[in-house]
Length: 131
Image (cartoon, rainbow, N blue to C red; front, side, top):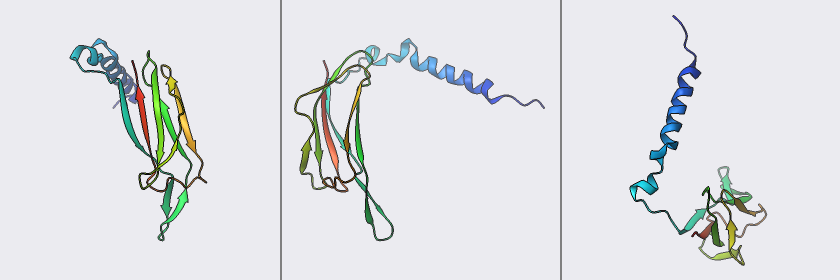
């Protein structure tokens, strides 16, 4: 019995899948009448601490909010990055003016582990818009 190389099957399957996804039919948004978003308000939960051990002792974590423009050709404008605590109280606003992210660009907000202001239910509200 001859053993078949797994790559001789796997690679053509991956290429077939990519061809199906990247072919002209994959532009379904334009052809199906689906509407692209021009903006959104997004709730992003974050872990600023986790509980350890049987006594549920909090262990502080650094938190990073990653903002990414996944559009290949158009910029987006981030208009708000607001940080809230466990009780829903606004802790901090991170933008004084809108942040423009070009095609495939990214940015981030980093909160150090010594910052305990968010608590275990910390979250961000991020607002963005696009032409």
